[in-house]
Length: 490
Ligand code: ADP
Ligand code: GLC
Image 1 (cartoon, rainbow, N blue to C red):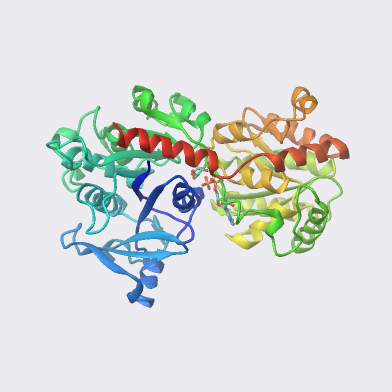
Image 2 (tube, rainbow, N blue to C red):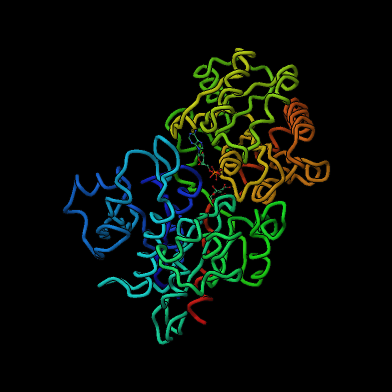
């Protein structure tokens, strides 16, 4: 049982992160190792990662080379980073740039289609041909950036004994959708440049509203499709959530499944925090953490202290806050925010902080260490998303007894048990859920937060239930392992 998997992705903790995708890609190898699967992660060598190679060249071994990789040389270097087996695709003409993985100072990189086609191409080659000392049984592609990898296996051969296509013994493929909002759109004239055959340009293939979609290419060619919660797997087949790809996904419903994300419970552990640690059995340190958070943010909050750690985008429902916060503050609540994103949302939050000094405080930026203090010290964590494939911050909230107040969409609905009268009576409630994602429902949820928080015994019970809720990778890693095994046994 078990085997070898090549994971292909654009982000991976601790090397490069813009969101939860990186957490998940970085956590899967250790979680799957416990199930007997050896996973290596192929990533682009963005500038900071290239520096890692330059700083310690002896630690990296060249395992793959192509001199015509979209206009330059591509080499793959194998090494170990923080216990992960990493394969870095070093192609300076594509990735050695100042800026983020997807955008530079003046917006998205104009050659993103080619940059991630190159990543996918190399992933597919390694899956098909293997490296000198390592041959994967299976390729696991994440999001649109790796979407062409299953397509290359399908259109250019997966190895094994079949001619073209996925012959018996050839590499199998899985694609995971972390967020269908990003689809990797490219102009139709790029078909040849993206190394896709003419016959692939059909509605059953990579064609999408007259152009090419890398995500669709992966969805129509991978052996299995997964997404990061059962709830989002169902939502993806509906027009409200599928973003135009609902039909494609529904047509392959028999190979679609939802597997919840976990969190790294060694890193996210209230008992292992250096400052004011606490546990479910002895939660007294949480009050000290709350005081430290209030001091750091200049807050004095008589009622529930809510926290929010997020990308500030439409997805996350941040625009609802100005409408619902005044009443919450009036009722004794407060809010500490850590986030960055759209300038208008950043501005709206800063404006709220200016209007409610001592009750609302906002840090614009990205700060992993500070985020721990928010999850430790908050009474509740707000996740009012319009859609949420899985969501990780509500899981941190559960783990830290920082009661999640979430919109009941996608993975949020799957992981938080609403404090309904029935759930309270049964002793099952772990948080507060609301639906739909609008100001009316959100305001009502905040009223419930205030009243539940005012009942110390009930509140402690909810916190204890939350902390007892399993958020690690055990169950989900076993589900991925079973899915992989089912594919290679075929
Ligand atoms: P998404 O991937 O859609 O942004 P997730 O909830 O899956 O949402 O993952 C977000 C991850 O990024 C979490 O680990 C969260 O703690 C982290 N994060 C988001 N914004 C910040 C920030 N400003 N500072 C530190 N961590 C952040
Ligand atoms: C995406 C989703 C988020 C999910 C993460 C990891 O960024 O927006 O809900 O948790 O991927 O799968």
